[in-house]
Every structure is written in C-alpha cells, then in structure tokens.
Length: 493
Ligand code: GLU
Image (tube, rainbow, N blue to C red; front, side):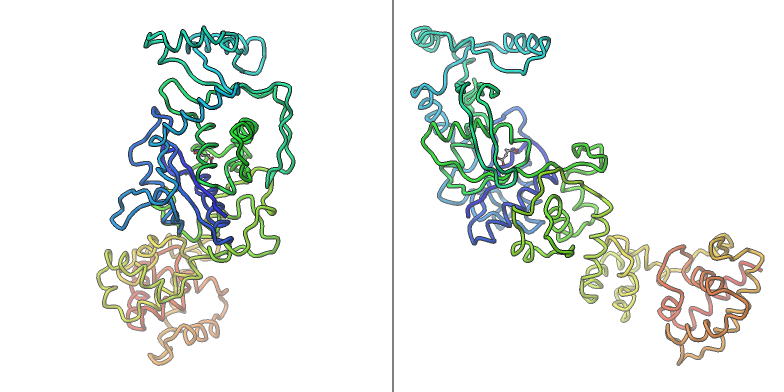
C-alpha cells in the first residue's frame, strides 16, 4: 500500500503530525508498500525556512524514513527521490493549472473576480444573518464573453486577482465510506464553492491534494479529522477528473486532559521539545500509536516492529484522543528500565563523567548505573542521581530528621549511635547490600525500620531521594561509608 505524509512547511513538526505520519508509515510497512513524503508549500506567506529539515529530522529521530519523495541524504541535505516527483508542490504549478483549466472547460469550475474587500463584506453580512460563510456565486452570473473580456483585458490588477472556484452541485448528495468514520453523507448545498487556484497561480490544498494523490498513486490517505469537512470537495474533484479516489481515514484530534483541542497552552506540541527534554524515540512512537488506537489486549509497550505487525485502522476510535503527559512519562520510565544495563551505563557515562571525571575510571560504573536505572526518567538526570558517589554529600539535621519516617532531631544522636555500633560490626567481607541489610534488620532494637534507614541513607548520600541505604553503602565501600557516618555524627552533636 502506498501511503503519504504531506506536511505544509509552515513551522515545526507537531506531535499530531508525527502521529499521522507514524500511522501512514506503519501501514505502508505492514503491507510492504511505500511511504512517500511530499511538501505542500502552496501557502507562500506561511512558509518557514528550515521547516522541511526540521520535519525530516523529527521523523528520522522517530525511526520514520520516507521511501520516496522528500528526504535527507547522507550529508543531511534535503533531496527529492522517486519517479512521481517533483515532490515540492511549488514545482508542480503547471500541472495544477492544467487540471484547473480542464475543470473550467468541463463546466465544473469558474473564474471569480471578486475582490478581497467584497468577499470580506459578504462574509460580514452572512455572519450578521447567522448564515454559514459561503461564496454567493456572484461571478457565476458572468457571461462567457464577460469572463473572457475580464481575463483578456490586459488589466493586470484584474487578471492577477482572479481565482478559479469549483462549482459544487447543490442538489447532489455525496456519500463515502471512511476507514475510521464509516459511512459519510454530505449535502451539496452545504459545501462552499472552494477556490482551487489562487490569484498568485498557486493551487489551494484541495486541488493540489487531489491531483497529487492521484498522480502519486496514493492508496490510502490518513490525515487529521480537521479535513473531514473538506472531503466532499475532494470527492467531487476526483469524480470530475475521472479518477478513483484513494481510501481515506480521518484520525481523531488530539485533546488536552480537559478535552479541548491540544494547543501550546497545554505544554509542548513540537516534537523537537520532546527530543530536547530527553524522551526516547521509542517512547514517543509507543505513546503516539496508543493515542486513538488500542490493540485490544492489555499490552502497553510496543516496539516499532510490533506496531507494524499489530496496528489496524479498525481499532482506531472516532472520539478525540487525550494527550496525557503523565502517561508519556510513565512510558518513558518503562522504556528506560527495558534498556540492557550495560547499554544504559554506556549511555549515561559521558554525561556523568562530564561532571565527575572519576566515573571514567570507575570499574563498578555499571553496578552504579543499575542502582539508578530503576528510578530514572531521563538520561540527563544521571549525574544528579549519582553525585553522592563522586562528591562529599551536604548533610544537614533537616535532612537527617524526617517527620514521615518518625525521626526527630532529638533522636538523631541515639539513632547514629545505634547505626555506628551495628555497622562497625559488619566486616569488610560481609560489606554487601545483603550483609548490611541482615545486620541492620537484625538489630533494629526499639527502632522502626525507617527510623534507621532514612538517616543512614541521608547521611551517605545527602539526598532526599536516592537508591536504598544498603545498596548505597555497598557501592561506597566500608571505609567511605563509615567516614560519612562519622561526618554525620559530627553534624548532629
Ligand atoms: N498539508 C496538509 C497539512 O499539513 C496535509 C493534510 C493531508 O494529509 O492531506 O495539514
């Protein structure tokens, strides 16, 4: 199956766009077809330099590489490749004009010379009368001779301004079966006479989409639900040009947690922000695939390969999909734990060593990495999470005492007395997490577990959160651990 991703280069790669790109990618791979990228750069005023590179990089980060169309070469340059190009719509203007003229010749489209001022006036009027904004067909009343005179008048201001509009048959009922929405039915009189070719000679999305997805042999169009209301226009164009439309699947919108359309106010919507924050590409892919799609099982973690195997449009819901940042973070944690520990250690070593060069010569680094892998969300948190090993902790009475663990400042001398006694008795040979645990748990005396463990861990790390007291004590080694215990005693006495 040939699928496509045709972004408008008007800004960054939006998470919603990455989701539709992903779905298109999954189905092309599932069917051993191809995935094509085309650039819809017909809105010249909204072009943003660098947007195409940004989008391709975002896709590549997620593991989506176009098979055809616009892609990055080995040097990171944007190139076009394939037999259906050019893939920048701005380089295909002659084609769109040809089909627009054909539609005019067939009587399905007409020239319109209305000025923007007149159209604005008309819209204001319609609004005041609570009517749907639609072109009032003033120019449809022009005779052929009048149109020709205007077109050939040589008056640049007039001929520059004219557009070509489609002539929607008001009495027609347009029906279609969408892969997600099912049977759809549109009444012609509710559909506006859409502009197909603009005054600047560029097509609108509507004409360009139909021409391109026909000529580029697209089998399936997966796009956002915001295009659903335009579907009747596209279906009419396919019919008038004598072409079979592709299959369409309109995917539900992304919603914020309060069920409003996801916008910048709800946090980051640019894929780039998530890359910068340190989300794993696997997590983003997993997360976006589950927005609106459910596998019908309890499985929550999916690799790209599993998604290619299991994804299906039948299991995509019609209702909006909630973009839940907490779920994203949960998935991030899950994926972090899945990384083989050696690989995890290798990935965090450079950042940790940048802050603590001693990490480079630490033979036990993997063991330390394993201690934080259970708790970490982002790689960049690693130096902070391991700093207790590489630098002396800042310990205070406020940290050592802890209300939740029922440790008061007044109790600290007694607690550290007990801890010192217990740990002095643990030999160098027994100094493992297990050995220390046995010693502490077997000698709690009148203390509750937390009353010894919290101060011990806090004294060893200087942190409110860290790996457990026994693991930390083992990692530090007996000598260093006993020194820190002594230092804590000095602080409290
Ligand atoms: N250029 C359109 C957009 O960025 C593409 C929509 C489609 O997938 O056809 O929204």
